[in-house]
Image (tube, rainbow, N blue to C red):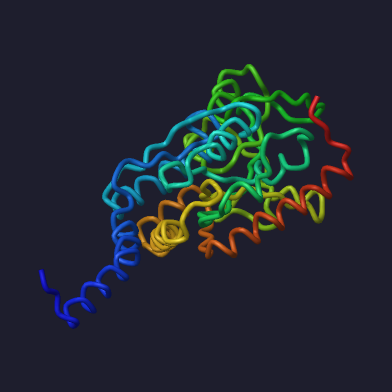
Length: 287
């Protein structure tokens, strides 16, 4: 069979373009099946609420289900390691939060390096912690014993039932109980009052300079393709600009935190450094 020179050049050009076209097709195909968002706490807490909120948005925008999977235990380390060990294909994500930055200094022997092994995709929001008590408890003084839980939902259940007297909760997890009069807020931990709880003072009103907050974002295993990271980041930021989603975040006491993947990575690194100093100064250790 004779092939003319012009036809040969056309075929060679088409062959050369195949890898690029394949790459584009791969990017356009994502996601082609359901995506898991792993949460390191029990259902019902602020991390879980945020994962379901952003998961629903991503499901609507990208046409596949983003399913929340709760893997509580070891202060989110079980969930984090599960994501670290997952294929870097964009189908297993982690709902990242401040605990991930803190754990890097609290735990001496982790099986992963969070900053190195997790790719930052995008941040979602920042929220205050709120000190809440059962309304029946008269507060005159505090002598606290720390009781660890597998998530805020079971901790708040015990607070409502009188098994514990005080919980430092994120605002999203406690706000409906507060509005319903089932829990009484004493103070929020951010530098300024929460817009969702404007009548509640800050801890800084009594202890000048005190500030602490929780933040949420999305991460993936190291090596996740940049185009997939960019796709998810774009949709998260679109959600944070959407009036309805912004209103829902405000109802939860949150402040949107749109960031690029690079900026979110810098945020995680800065938080890790900050908490390392606090942990060293306070001599905090896991027993």
